[in-house]
Image 1: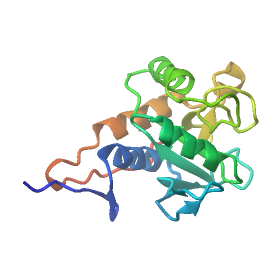
Image 2 (image 1 turned 45 degrees about the vertical axis):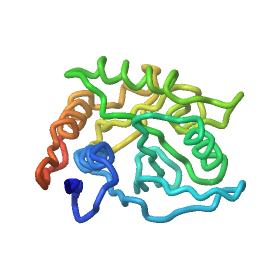
Image 3 (image 1 turned 135 degrees about the vertical axis):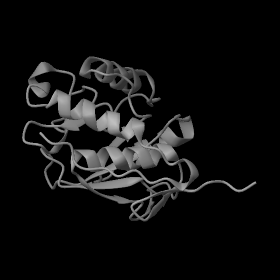
Image 4 (image 1 turned 120 degrees about the vertical axis):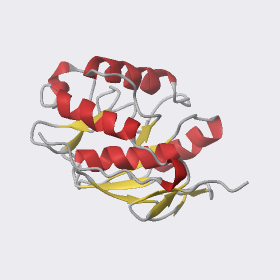
Length: 192
């Protein structure tokens, strides 16, 4: 039996979940690379982040690594924590959130951020635990009112600038992306 490969935009993805996140990033209009380079961690282990996002709004330097984890093991968490201690900011994302409104998506992100990632006695945590300004909120990826990809925290001070409808639409496009039988979804940036 032959496995159907998951291909999108010329990349062969290791999982459909990673490909769906690529669809989400395209819908948000953010430039991304898939597995652009690997790293040797301070403990000698090798680590290859799934994505590198460019020009993320609100980020000094604009670049952000993303790790897609449907299920998090302690070994994965240890490696991710080791990587995030370096100079490379990292966002850890689970499955594509379900829901037809922003409240459902926020609940999903909060549950993942607070309970899905095993910590090891204190920070620094990847960005699923802290937003770009260092406050300890769960980071929600989304689209701001200027139409750019941004990380938002739980607090209403963060979410005032989020375009809820565009963010929900981007997640919906990612959930609906089909790769069965070699299909490739066509995705356009969500209009704000």
